[in-house]
Image 1 (cartoon, rainbow, N blue to C red):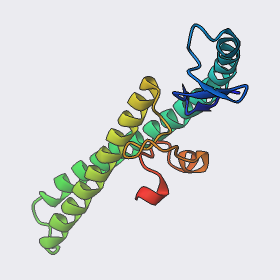
Image 2: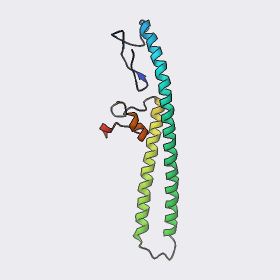
Image 3: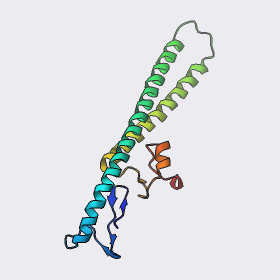
Image 4: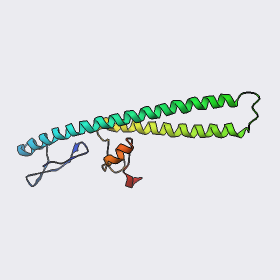
Length: 154
């Protein structure tokens, strides 16, 4: 049988106990098995790709909503801090502004990670570590659809 790894066919596949290139045009038996394996894998990957796209879409919407909310809150806080007659500690608005900026930076970084994951999905490398190429477990991708590394690589 041929092995399909992360949506791509391994360079060599086992066919009837021989190591052969699955796309070798001179190997008709293995080429037939290859095309059958490939179509099964493509349908499995299509479901996985659809699931991944949906998870990324939901995560993107969540992060974009948070970005909008934090941006709006930050603007409101800055406007109220600039009003005349406010007798509060002058450092409080600065601290709140810095916290807000840090949150915005984290959300923008998360949005960038989601965009990179979407790009990997389009390129067919989604679910593989960007560092080692090893497969990222489905549980990890379910918890963090934009995961770029395996847990061991963190």
